[in-house]
Length: 88
Image (cartoon, rainbow, N blue to C red; front, side):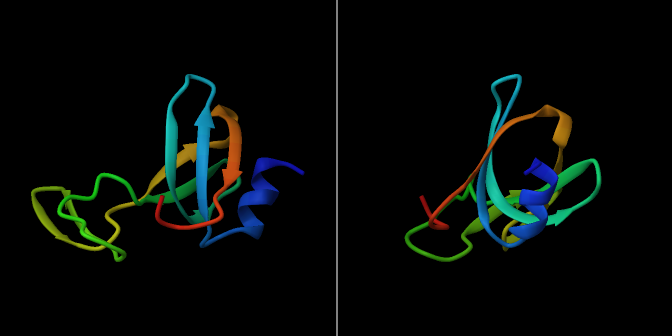
């Protein structure tokens, strides 16, 4: 099964993506295109005292939520692991 098929079947699930260059990304699969997967990061939270979305800093201001998502090209993915739980 390809990374594309795995991502399509698991939209909304927590994943850990390791790229060929050694970068590791953790997040929730938001959407999938033919050439990349978009995830919402769940790390980089500040002031997190328990379960919940936490406070994220992004752009010129700040706000509550999971922050903006970003795309990772399938060609750069070395390993894709589904995580059994959301908050690790």
